[in-house]
Length: 226
Image (cartoon, rainbow, N blue to C red; front, side, top):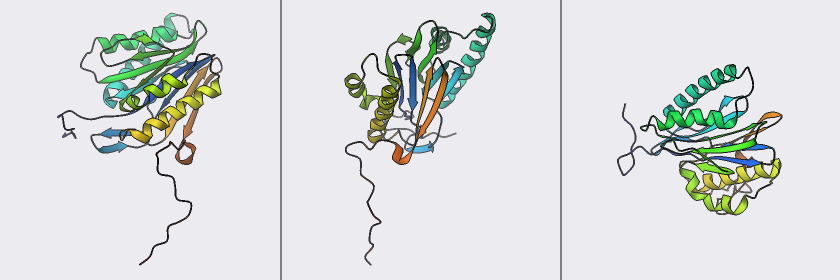
């Protein structure tokens, strides 16, 4: 099957994924646009995948590669849960399963973020870029849109943020990326994970913040003069 290629001869894929920890949990967010070159193949994809009840994965790169990895990690995480007598796996243990698969398969085009909550260490975020490195950090971003919002998160993130502040930060960050990155767009999905479980939110249309420089919606229907 032919694939659309960029000027450098390689397939161009893009997305924006974010995960930020707060005092008591984590917030994961992603846009929904799936692109192949200049063609938008899916405008409402869900890029946040559950690995177990308390751990989620943000996917960027090849959709086929990241979906295959998430299926394998979900299977091994469920086996691990049985081995520890039904207790919730820790976020780090699930992230370690993922990074081993990514590291041992260097040809995979997969840049991912693992985030979740466990009773041992609370909310945690692990970045896993292409190649299989695993790095724990307070917040992580990946995808083509991430290049536009590094300074935004450097400036806006602060330790000890509340749940509501963190959800607003993630939403605004993804909105900034969508305004500038042609490969990011569609709707914004958020998943918040804490001691009470998960909470899913979807933002679309006017619910997504208007970013300075965007073209505002007309106040009234234009008058057509023939």
